[in-house]
Image 1 (cartoon, rainbow over the protein chains, first blue to last red):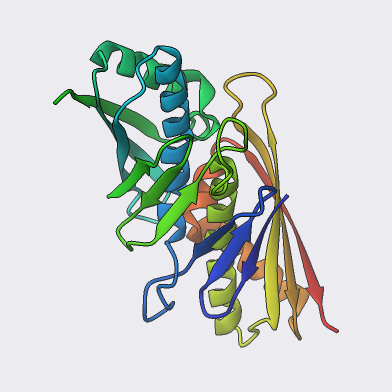
Image 2 (image 1 turned 90 degrees about the vertical axis):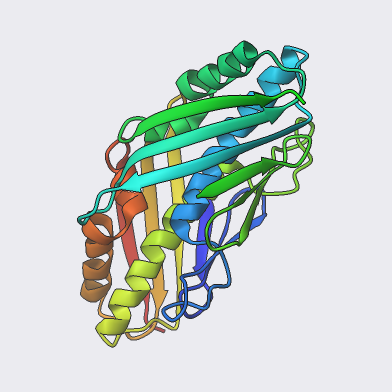
Length: 135
Length: 135
């Protein structure tokens, strides 16, 4: 079970079975900006989920990156409810990795392994770009 | 934009426009358990999102709680892709709050204000319980 506890103002601290805290807050003046916004936290969760898959798969291909990051942009409905409509992921890996292998790893994550991407894909359009910096 | 950066092993650190870090990691032995799991992080994001709505609305009703927390349980598909199928939220407030007002605040959040709940409701069944501890 995951519990999210109100810590006054607009601050909430969540904790799941792992026991690690996830702090969230609203921007001032409504909140005290003591933690990430909930939607940022959701996008981080998506990036961590698909990122772990991609690193795991690249390792199995003997293509562990030197560095790796995912940039995420979202587009939400302009009227309430402001649901996520589009998510754009840019995967950027550095190292001697064939771009084809990076794409293969991403495709496996987005179509099969990442529960968060597969859940969100039921409501939002998810697109990605992949870049290898071989230098 | 939100960026999620690989920090070695299975550790990823995300950061959105607010600048606050969200750390994630896998359990040992795959990861080093240095942060929350991605799906826990997603459920925390959901709780923070709807929690901020509920506290804001209760304040407008002059019903600010003495304490407040949300417990979240999820059910995922057993086969890949293991998408979220069901989410059960238990909202627990302490204070002199009419239960009807707590329910009104939750209904407004889940049907209109919370972008995360409204996004996830497109794919998963979301149910809730509300409890007021008036003691």
